[in-house]
Length: 337
Image (tube, rainbow, N blue to C red; front, side, top):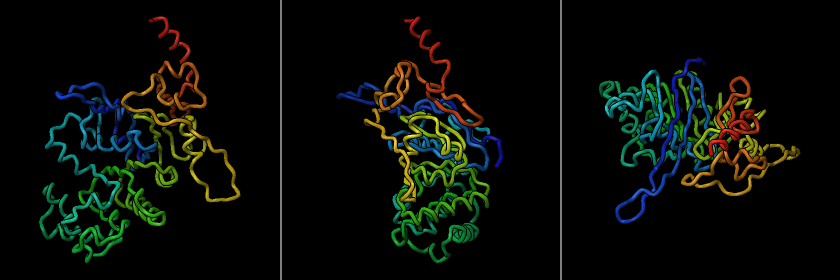
């Protein structure tokens, strides 16, 4: 795995306007993604986890520019994606592909599997018809299917097979980065393991880089080199996978990990219960957005937004429990009022 960043994200934001009245007057914004900064190295897998509604799927769509960001910089392989034209972005998408959550809804039911897999090559003008057919056969075999499956339709496959087809389609243009948005959440546990093992094998064979979006921390641990934890549109902790699971720092991360089931009936562990509901991204709390549910809330948490600071090599957290500067920030803020 290289230490050279393939993708760099700085201060990425996506605010959806809230409109009201006959003339559609904007009365506020839903802050789905609020000031994200991270990087992904060549050949690694970055897992992004968090509760439903935290903005992780929106982040994936922003990186593909399926949604246009409100602010921020997304640099991929030396290109600044947010400044590209639609045609330049279409060409760049050969190198960035996506595997979607629902393996049935993401496949056109009117097309055969062969046509579905050929489509990315046709769109990008890659290879002639004979070569395209050969590549369809090759990648069906790569993901564990057979040549005759190319003549079938999506409804004739199981959920696990459909997700394999979705992965094959993502591989057709030989991408450098694959964004996998909850790729196994709709599958049975036994099938999940098969698909995850397939993705890991493909990563080695094709030198792929993954962004793996999920809410299942057990799945993320299995496949990820580093993990970023999101809460209400922000990253609250990011670290190498084993370091995060063995020594979580943020109270939110600790609570998420305490809820992961352990396959041992004799093992007892403390479960941390987070009280209350996740606040609305249309009206997020001031200061630390987690303070309304945090058992360690301090006065500073309601006033000052914590920054993502490195606590040890490669392990960063946004929490005032680890911020020695917070008292000075409060005094400066109060002095300016």
